[in-house]
Image 1: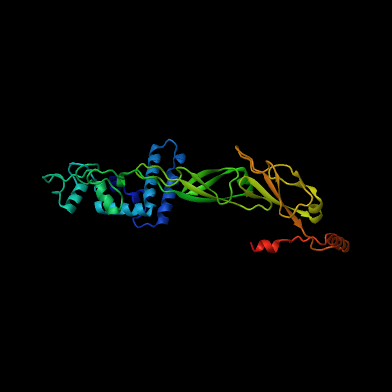
Image 2: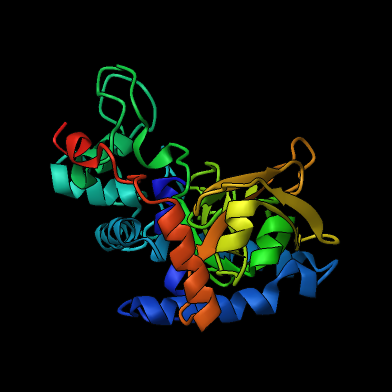
Length: 338
């Protein structure tokens, strides 16, 4: 979008809001009009499609504080006058007249006689319109002597990125799903890949804020949160779970049936002497994607009984007597000072 476009288009009128409208009022007006003129609701209606584009163009400028400040300044300076690159017809004075009056180069509106001041928008001997506005509002511009550089208001600029968040049920995160996101009055469908972990971000190209002057739209960055599950947790493509075992099962060894997320239980052998905290792996029973499968990691937790019967206590005392002399903490103090 060029500086001339900003002079000619009243974005406040397009959205039907006053010039001092706050961000909330602008957003509310945009949402209402976008729903009313959305192409999906007006199929085959070219006028509605054009109006929808105008609404989006207006909102892209007015919803961005910096662009809105520049737009207001340009409109205030030009007074809504049309800029033309050379002599024009009769009527109210153009932008040349305003700039001529400001810098002493003109002799009044067209039709009053005398030469008109002309302002070039491209390279040439004198600074162009984009150079003037660029210097006023901090935008880069082509130098007055033709050196290359950004083109100020006329340069296509990528839109800014938008952000969103979504919270998924654990099973949906494991299996992959789609999520409907409300972003600046638009409903965007995001595809969530299988096995996404909590806190990960996905980027949807071109789904952010519209670009300026024909530039590409920004991206939408979605932060994914995964709801906790009472049994499983995600670790990359692996599923983790904790299985309690008795002291006797850990010491003597056993075979357990453990549940899986996507099928029948699997049998898992716990070797004799398995300590608490050791992880046992079940191949291929984690997250499944088109390119790889994760594993199921089962952490063994030895449960210490809170109450013992008389016979159980005697049996443990006998066990302790039989293992007397074995120091399970041997070398701990030495390792602590390393």
